[in-house]
Image 1 (cartoon, rainbow, N blue to C red):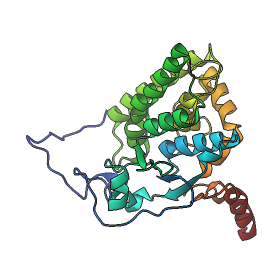
Image 2 (image 1 turned 180 degrees about the vertical axis):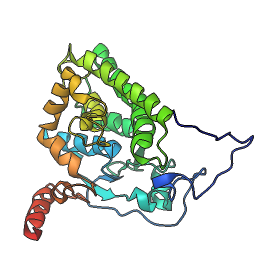
Image 3 (image 1 turned 135 degrees about the vertical axis):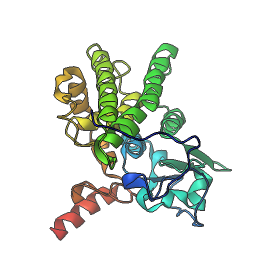
Length: 289
């Protein structure tokens, strides 16, 4: 193990120039940094987000709801460029005081309802439209068990393993080993559950699957931190089967593209205001090639 001569000070103080890839946006205080009004589209549901795993949860659910014919789930998805600090605008902070994507504003009621934190948004939409969350108490509780499992576990995969494995300016063996171990333990939890069930919470597709797949399912094809080989993902046979099944759902494929700004241009739809935007985006990319 490499030497580390760092000793924590008695009182921690912020060093703005430290922090690696996200030093320009990380800070130890909350609140807005600048005044800016959020744009408003034509639909009752206004989503302010970016196509990270947390953002994908919401766009996948909305696309699944639309695929079921729920016209009230039509939405405008505006891009929040987190690397540029859009999440610290006064308009965004008014919707989410925690300055994290995604944030949803439901203008179908008066006064409008703000919903922040991805798990809360999934639950809100599932209850609003009556899909992807069982009504029977035991089944509903099981789906919520796994939804909250994801909310508690994903930070270890993202802020823990992902940060130290991919983003940290200094590779720390202890940190990578610690969080790789936890990531693999979580994958084993999922693999054991999926050995006995088609979907995460049972035999029915639910917001538990929609929450977990963008984080853990994306590891299967190297789509998250390019860490599939490092974590030996294919050894989790039941988990891999589930991840592949979810990836083939058309709504998942559409939801993955919304507010995405990296990767293959054909897989990026920076903003979404109508279903035809997906076709128009594909045609635009073909014309540019």
